[in-house]
Image (cartoon, rainbow, N blue to C red; front, side, top):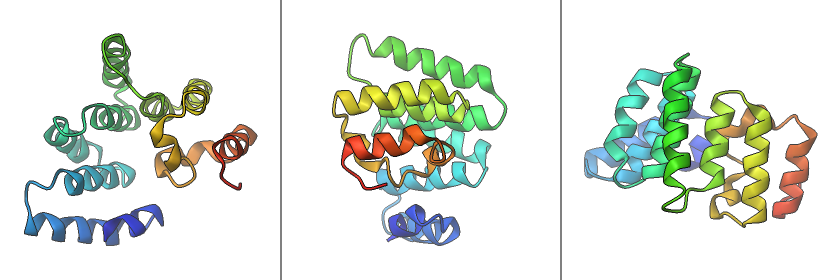
Length: 158
């Protein structure tokens, strides 16, 4: 129930639904994950960072990418870059989605690298590219003409 509100940027309403879900099942990892994402988007970075660690076992690369985003936006660039390096090293042993890496670069406001990772995601048909059109973590990229090109390449109308 929270996701439609989340994607409409109605974060307080989304949080209400995630918390209701967690009252029913305190171990529901997806509700924790989206609650944590929403806290980050509200600028509640310290609360979100602590929470991402709670869901890392179920959503390792996504949680780490969003923890890095939160660190970056909280002014802790070194911590964000440390997580980024860790994921890049892990990519030698297992698949790490360029979409997750793009989110970290967006958090660091390194938009050139974010676009490079999104281009990689399109080229390899990364599954999370389906969220490109609605992902609030990429909002700062939307006014760049390259974003419209990406949307078109993924098959979305701009």
